[in-house]
Amino acid sequence: MIVEKAEEILKEYNLCNHCLGRAFGLLGKGNNYIRGRSIRLVLNMEKEAKGEGSIQEPQECELCGNVFKKTEHLARLCYDKVSKLGLEFESFLVGSKLPKEVVEKEQEIIEKFELKYAEPINRELNREIGKILELILQKPVNKSDPDVVFIVEPYSERVELQIKPLYIYGRYRKLIRGIPQTPLRGFKESVASIICKPFSEATKGKCVFHGAGREDIDVRMLGNGRPFVLEVKRPIKRRINLEKTAEEINRSGKVEVLGLRFINKEEAERILTSNHKKEYEALVYVEEGISREEVEKVVKALKGTIIHQRTPRRVLGRRADLVRVRKVHEAEGELVNERHFKLRLITDGGLYIKELISGDKGRTSPSVSEILGKKAWCEKLDVLNILDESENFING
Image (cartoon, rainbow, N blue to C red; front, top):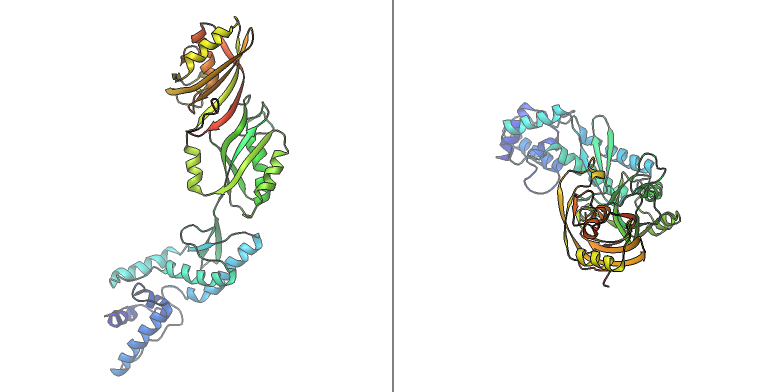
């Protein structure tokens, strides 16, 4: 049936051996050119036996326009593109953009002759270019997760690169107060800009900072540091020295990074969506005065307590107005002087500590102000640690 079907096709369409073979491309093994040439050979042998004229391969294919004669040239264009950029990568994939008329004509032939085992033209073209590129690049095709995808427009001979982002995990300490986590008008620097600058320079890509939560501008992030993920878009250089980059960041004296390592996209998403407990230390001011007994009263009232916190007024423009239910897992207090005490807490992520102290005019309950029956507010706040579920640094 294959030879008969091929004869029907070739009576109406002048196809090259590639396109003829591709009409039956999902049958058997071997490349489509050999498959098409073999089908044409058998067909012509039968025609000769009947005393009929043969059907030779046309000078120009009616479907592809002889695009398969350009595969080596197209592969060379891809090679030249990455070589000129100095692009570092370990694996690749080839994709293609074909003119609408070529795709539609192929579909017309498939439907007209009910070609159940036909292979799409772009799949063959991608594969043939990929074979040549594997040889000249000495790098493998990776169909599931390539570092770079070559998008080839074979007729206009244009090549576009889709470069896989780099994902880098780490933790940061913010050692000083007065800088935001991400760029903010009125501030020259941010945690993100200090961390991103050396990565952008090293990779020659665009660095995007993603923090696992954030702290206020006037709050330090100490201890084991806050988890973050850097997404470097369109990196030209992938083989960067993380230890050397960390040293450069840490010389700022404002931000330190630790535990840098490369991760994949799935791990990045998991890190950024995890909700960690946090350990805080707050310096609390009580204008009417505070005693050691009152500090103990606050600690006893907060430890193990469920807090109902309506979105603080100060962030209403950025957050939905709703009531969050969070837990204070651990609490410790230490009297500093007649108006100040230190409060150390371990809480669920997402609890606003300043409002836990002030009460935010009743929007957070219970609060330190409510427990004392006196106005209290946070003068200084540090995040000491970002904890895993099993960690409890106050009690060791």
